[in-house]
Image (cartoon, rainbow, N blue to C red; front, side):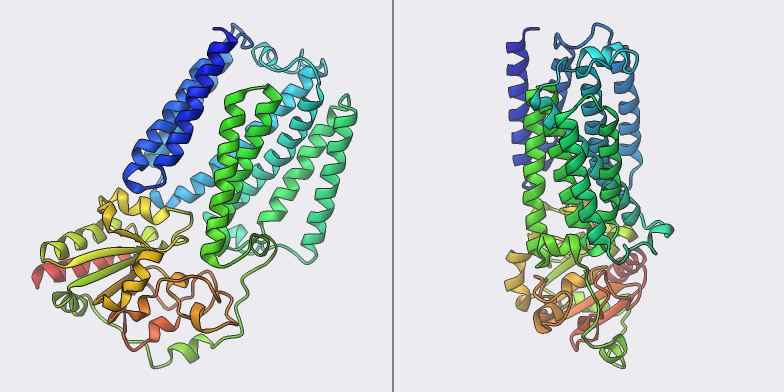
Length: 476
């Protein structure tokens, strides 16, 4: 296949990527957008196999495709929706390490060291001369890719809540060490660019960047993980785009740029939703303190309720809003919520869902979770749309959410979440909170909503509590 036809096919693939991203902006078109993106990747992959630069021996390529297909299929079938953020973190890491290895292989070949080091099929597909573009792109791929890889592994471990990660939260002077490592990585990059014959320096760069990736993410708390995931996603795209310049591959440059740009935009959106700057997320922490203690907030004020009492509230309600949080995802309660929604809707009750941008552990987590349970897309309302209407809500049912409904964000300028946009559920006529206990959210502060006069606490596992509520609704 000629180079012209290959580039035309790459252009088609790029258009499909762009249309796919556009489709992902709304739940109703998300499935179509995902399919368009997958089609674009299929076109790019197949056409690449016909590139004259690719060796006639595709054994290694097809072996990689087979292994990747099996792993991807197993993950798609077995991964729980609650673990989707962890999976995204791993995908970011895989993209980063792929960029590191491909760029390193290109450097070896360009310096005449490919024979005996790389398989023939790989060596033949890589550039054969060490141009300035290749060297600059190579060090960029190595640096960004390695940071992405190790940073993503740390993010995965934190999201998975591995025991050994609970006691690791950085160390004094960590930011100084990070600065030193960054300067060192720039210095090593300059050495490689000026004297690419020192091939071992590339792996020194990768090692330094790998340590930097770990140290950058370790101090960041769980509350900021949605931002970190979006940022690492952007890093993986930038690394891929740099690798595209290494390989002189147009579709990789375009696709990487799309991922990098969209990741940065999403990072900015998440920071705005949390009222925090990116600098504060990366180098600061949410510090609890300066406010009332849990005993002062809750003592003698929390009112417990039962499924039967909540069912009685719904009997007289005309409008109900459900606010999902990560607790709903952990309890796998989305299908029980769907059943409750259908029961109430059949009775003529209007049921809507208030979705906070950072509810769950990654952007769009709640939307995907509820869509999986066949909750109507039209019922999922963004915070800006539903907030002005809470005063007309009869009952708001909060399931597993905490910081995103904490009114302290509006009332206490000294609070660690001060200024963070929240769902104004406390303005509803009645609020029912489904929660295991009064334990704080990621911010580590008590929530006065739980002790408010118009709030009832339905303690217990989210799924079990909703099943009991559905049974009470049916019996009533």
